[in-house]
Amino acid sequence: MSVSRVLFVGVLVIIGVEGVKGARILGLFPLPSFSHFAVPSALLKELANRGHQVTVYSPFPEKSPISNYTNIDTGARRDDFLRHTNVSNSFDLAKHSYMGILKVMWTFGDGFSNSFLQQKEVQKLLHSNDQQFDLIIMELFVTDALLGFVHKFRAPVVQVVSFGGSAWMRDLVGSPSPYSYVPDPLQEFSDRMSLWQRILNTLGITYQKLSLCIHHRPKQQAIMEKYFRDYAPLPSISELASSTSLILVNGHFSIGYPHPLMPNIVPVGGMHLKPAKKLPEDLQKFIDEAPEGVIYFSMGSGLHGSDMPAIKRQAFVEAFSKLKQRIIWKWEADNLPGKPQNVKIGKWFPQSDILAHPNVRLFITHGGLLSTQETIHWGVPVVGIPMLADQNLNMAQAVARGYGIQLDFANVTTESLEWALKEVLENSRYRENAQRLSRIFRDQPLTPLEQAVFWTEYVIRHKGAPHMRSAALDLTWYQYFLLDVIAVLALAVGSVVLIVFLMMRLLLRKLFGGERNLQEAHTSRKKCD
Image (cartoon, rainbow, N blue to C red):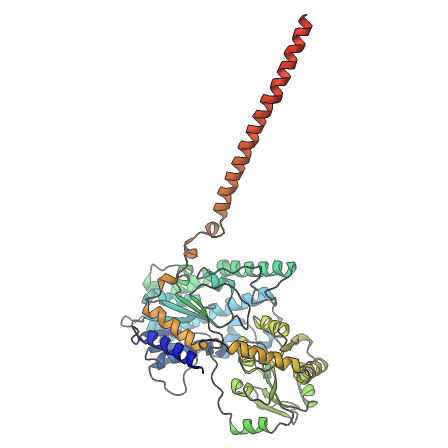
């Protein structure tokens, strides 16, 4: 770390400590997907380390106690996710259309909002009269009914976005999001779109916003009114959402696309990343002793490799058996049928620490944002097999930036896998591009976690930081888009044009009408003579 950076961080630490006593912070995270908790978890633990009293309601209890940190297990598990989405196999989600994915999101949002607020410990919090909090931290995703706690405790709220952000997220704080170059995260477009892509981008984002307002928020409003009826009258979900003091977005322009942000939207992409730890002895030996290097294969925490259809699993098994490299495969069952000798399976692996090892040559990934950030951070090229949501966009970026190849899961065969793996392993440009992006991503004055802590404490120090609130939130839609100004100007210009037209018409009548009258009078006199 350079001397200038040490001094810079030191100044921020001094500023942060001054005027910030230990605050009481409430964290609300109902979803049983660790990819949605990994980012806020890093922030919450660091705040506890800095002396704040942190109370977290989540399905991820800590294995060992942390000072100033209390985690209350809400009991939700992965099977609940499948139940709320009405699917039996997580790989079935890849079959959903664009509209189907949105419907799934709203459905499990409603399900988890209900189940979270019904939970015994959450009910105690809901009906408590002796608890107060200085700040609430929650995820901005699909459980908007939890904003009722903001109304109950009258506390400022910081919302964490576990994906790269969306137009309706930016709308909460009045941040502009031009459809002409800010892509929809559920589609594969870049920031340089063709006319047809801009049409699809506009239609997609418009559909999201309409679906949010017409379908999702009314249901969330009903859920909030059911559980928070003792605190009536309740504001609308939209009012509570727009009172957000700060949004921490798990993204960064160096790995996404540059776009305008309000000061209360802070990019903290990679906040969950930590320095590499020593690997377990058996794993370290497996990687160290691989003469041709190692390939790491994981479909993330939400998708279990063991749920993969048999025909696809066999394609991977056959392709891996032909490789010189060793493969580490995150496989959640005890046995892998036909497992080749060069494959090591396990139900869980320390992914970031594995990717940090210099002998790891390639990462086969579903393209989740956390996995994408980890592979960029450590400079490892990818073969991406996206399944749903923003994974397609993330892997489209990998292809565009030259550090990976994308395969369609529906079309995965032994032959396509062999081609993709050989291309990335034998063409050095993929690794060179990955390492170049790693240098760009790491080149920041503060770590993402330091950024997040500073701005979170900034909100605490300044009682919600209302001075960062954009005036755009107080405008009507026609004022925001200047339709009233355009109407007045159009009326003014139209009036001027009309006046000029009438004056010209009158002038022409005077000129040519007078001559005609003279000619008629002259003709009349001739007839009289």
